[in-house]
Length: 301
Image 1 (cartoon, one colour):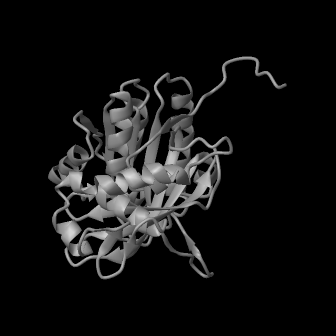
Image 2 (cartoon, rainbow, N blue to C red):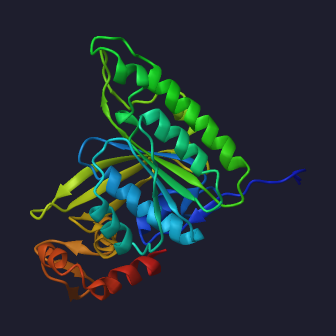
Image 3 (cartoon, one colour):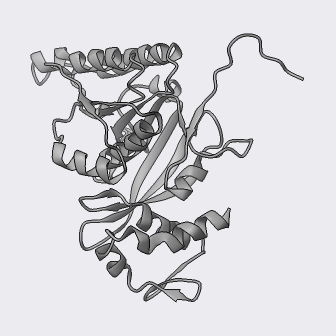
């Protein structure tokens, strides 16, 4: 029998309303749920719902431990009304601390400082790919600044990890990041340097699977790194336009993907018909309508 001497670090797991997402983070002991610990990178191509997903995940984390969300807007496309709507729809009713700073470096430094506080269980940095070092901002367009963003990201990651090591509150920093083709070779990569690949504890890759006429779409996700369990597990989330990740419609698609429900001309669960998918999307505000799908998922496993 192995006995640890000293303080053992436990990983707090968040159970969300999203069934396949919870199971995508299963560990070898059969524990499920998103691990609230250190740094999580959320990457994907443009328009795959990275920011919306980060808002929704942050809302559940902050609600879990009754804390404040720290938000560093690097891309400068932050819409406070949209973020408020998404957070409220996902059950969050606390505060969001918008990280100040004249430069991206200032915002990064302030984010690290803020997240040392026990009242901040979750932070969002949106996004790594938009970070501009001072040398890039004040220099000329033709100046070479390779590696400076990576140096900033790596230094911030190390500082965040050390700051979290001394906190009692389970904490995680969510990076959003873009995917782009490698220059001069095949494949794709994400900005921010190589070090973030081992400094992050979890990495999630998002893609758009199915687009609806109203702008809603199905998100396909893959856990590409999981320090506390298995990797390459997939999950599905439904991003309802103007609403955020919708638990009911996500449950519908989870049931379809797990072959619990059928989607032909209409959506069927057992002998019960729920009409066309467009009708479910139209009536999505009626959350009680989706209870049979949520119940079926709970009974599935």
